[in-house]
Length: 175
Length: 290
Image 1 (cartoon, rainbow over the protein chains, first blue to last red):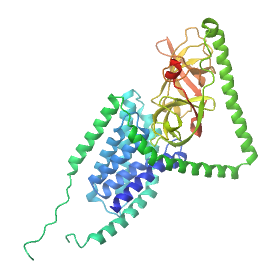
Image 2: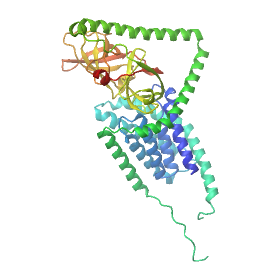
Image 3: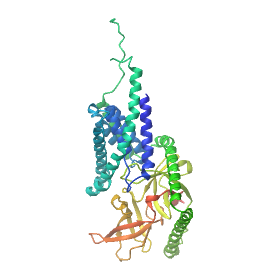
Image 4: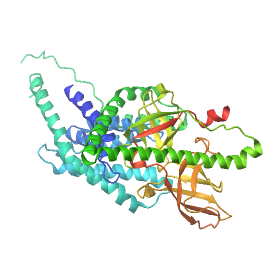
């Protein structure tokens, strides 16, 4: 329960920060993708289902406010990214930062690339080199930079929760 | 170790692959519904508006406050104020100038011939503040802090500093999403003021980095259009009110077909630093009906 409250809090804060503060802190018009960080982190920290749920909520928020007239588009992309990250839960260790960084990088790249293909390539904008240089790559770099600070916060929040939950329920659970 | 151990009922849970399938189905059907029908999610918009928008408003207000204070520290207060006044003056003059030119043009051509009424002069406008921007990097839509509660509706035109910013494409009770004309998925029918040639103003992410908008399909057989000509919204657009300034032509190229021309326009609005906008309280459809 507590985990869920924290989850909604994290999504909420990330979305608001992403649309306000980080838009003013953007470098050359490029801002980081906090929702990808949240989706991916929850994916590999908990499990597939969690990743999916978080991805769906994040994507749906994007759809409501910035969807291009279609509801469910971003939700679908984020959903699959969350699910894919959930598959890496088994090789995830809390003290290891390499896997999260790699996964978030990959997730952001996949997200940007899918966005390019579906929203730009299909409308006949073929200069992929340009879009890669000036949108995809800067976004990934900036996102990674923010991950270094944001990911420990998410981890910290949830580490505490896990300790508490374990403490409360350990009697009733099988050992 | 009694054999009558009460087995705890297992919590009901769906395997993750089915959940994935279900959610995918939900997304796809939502997309289909919103794409193929005119259904607009008013309740969801309303809910989201009440939960998210107040926070965005607060955060961006705090952000603006902080940035203003920082500015004041860095620069002299008087210089800042003077600058503001001058900018305001430029904006006013630009509006006035366009209006005058347009009036002259209309007088010469339309009113004399058809004795049309001045049906487009003096639109009612309402000011609004930009509170959030598109969270992705592919499009440049933004959210303003007024919605249906303030009398706004879909397709209302948004201007700032004397030029066209865009139009409202999505709306909630206390927020509205504005699609900027520089956006990659935006197309506006425009007109060169001097020669009244029609052209198509299309936003492009590639050109946005240089601070310009692209235009195409300009048929200029008499070679009249020159660099620096004013481009305004045309009267054949079904979403945009006519004769709102879009920008000035900064580049003209002959297309390969030798019939049409394309090029770039320097927008009249500084899209990088939009903070306050004006919403025209009339849509093209309403004006047409009167």
